[in-house]
Structures are given as structure tokens and as C-alpha cells.
Image 1 (cartoon, rainbow, N blue to C red):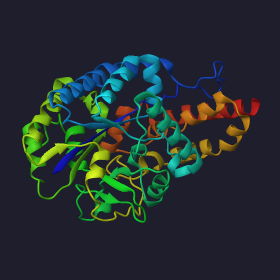
Image 2: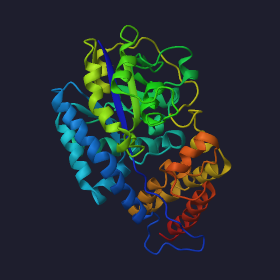
Image 3: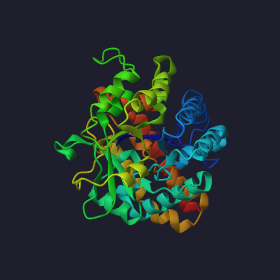
Image 4: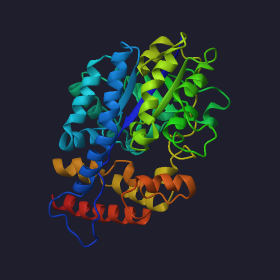
Length: 393
């Protein structure tokens, strides 16, 4: 039988506050507490809480035959605990159903897999412990920050004992193959689940676009497309930001109605079911290796690293940050080490992107700053002060 595999990313960064070059951190805190609190509470009310209620109802309605997966970053979890603990409780309720899988992730949603292997391993272990302590699950499937992946990262993650990895089903990687099969990392027993970006983006980005030729997207129409793969798919992997539901696509668009009615439509065909990533990997053999000889991500039209490394501002900020590591850990100061990790969150560099057209619009939508230059200036001002704090410790 073929299956639909839902994966949702849950992430909220600690956004850097507007920090002046001449300012000194008196409270030893570089992040915008007011904005972070307001955004997390808003998204909780618009997305996390109603979407979790919807999924819980669907699990009960379908007697365990509807299943999904999440990765929740450590920095998001910390803000839930501080600003809206009811979100954590709602995820715990989902975990208790046995129909929800929590995936591995870097605790700080960082780019450490590209810059610092030891830092990467530490953050992965921190996140795994978080999931075990709060949801009773030790992740066995991994989702790297923004689906950043290549063969080297695949071997690194396989070496950490994970059974499978999520990655982008990029056309230049697939080279005519289908994303709707299970593949394996070359030279390892670790399997790959590739995002079907066409169907995923139909929900995440095109759902409310009235100029889209398939508007309106109904659950019946979408299920019909899925059923068309009955004889040429093991799995259709729908990977997206959880904020798709209620935040990026507002409730008024009908996105929650779509989510609620989709399982009925998919399950109306006897050859289809819903599975978690671990179940998908367990029940399907890998049809072949899939080599990622270039680093991919799920960001922007390029699906590469340009969302974070595409200009000189981004590269300067990243390089200066990671150059501080030895001095940071030499201090053995908890605040300094924790702040260093929070400053690694990929969003800081994403906000510095100066891309144009549709990619630029997306970056601007997420950014709390007036311009990419402002994002760079405030971040570099923070690094300047942070470097002084390290020297004074």
C-alpha cells in the first residue's frame, strides 16, 4: 500500500533586538523579548493551538489511521515554555496518541552541519534529549535545518545512528527520478525520504492564490492527484512549515477545513494510508541510492544555500560568529555559551538576504527588520559587544 507522510516544521527564533553600535548590553541580553513574546503568542493562537486541536480530532475520528510528524526546535520549545506553555501541553497530548512522531533536529536550528561538526553533534544530542524528556520519544529520523543536505551530511547523520533523513526532492538531484520512493544515502544503511515539493507547495504557498490555475484547492481535488500515484509510488511526502495552517494561510482561506477533510478523501481509496516517517522507512525498501553531490535545502527557488550565504554580509556575519568558538568555550561561562548558540540560528542570516522578486518577498515577509542591511548591522553590533563580554569574562 502507498502512503502519505506528513511532516511539519515548528520553529521560532530568538530575534536580535535593534542594538546600537555604541550600546553596551547592560542586561546581558541581545534579543527582542517583547517582539519574540508577541510573535510566539500570536502564532500559537492562529496556528499551533487550533492546528493541534484539529490533528487530535482527526486522529480520534480515524481511530489512529491519521498520522503526522513534527520537528520542534529547542529555541521554539523554550519560548513556548516561557510565553505559552499550553502549546507544549497540546503537543504532549498528541504524543500520547501514538500517532505522532517527533523528529531529530539541531536544537538551535543552526547551520552547524556546514561549519562545525562537533557543535552540530552537541546540538543534535541536546535536541534528542529534549524530545525524550518531554515527549517520551528518542528521534530515529532526522531533519536538518531547512532540509540542508548533501552526501557528507548524510554520512554524518548516519554515523549518529539515525535510521533515516528527510531531504528536498530537488529536480537537479532526482534527475528524472520520482520523489515518491524511499532511497538510501550512498555507502550507508540510512534511508532518505524526499519532499514532493510540488504537492507540498500547493498547500503551503499556493493554497490561497486566486491566480493559480488550480484554485480553489479542495481536499477532493488534492486526494485525486494523490490517488493518481497508486501504481507508481511508495510514499508521497508532504513537508512544510506548520505555520502554513492559520499563519501563512489564514483560517479565512479555508485551510483548516482543507486539513480536516483531507484524510477522509485520501483514505477513501483502499490502497492509501497515512504513515509516520519511521513507519514509511520500516515498511518500504530503498529502491536505490540517491546521491546529493551538491548541497540542497528547501529554501527559495534555488534550493541551495544562497538563502543564508548568498551575499557578503551573510558570509561575513557567519564567519565572524564561528570564529569566536574557541574563545567562547574557554570561558566556561553558561550565559556566553548559550548566547553563542542562540546567535547561530539560521534565521539571523536569512534576514540578511537581499534577493529580489519572489524569493525576496518571502525573506521580507519573515524579517522583523526594515531591510537586510538593518538585519546585518544590528547583528554585527551584537557580535561586537558579545566579543567584549567574552574578553571580560
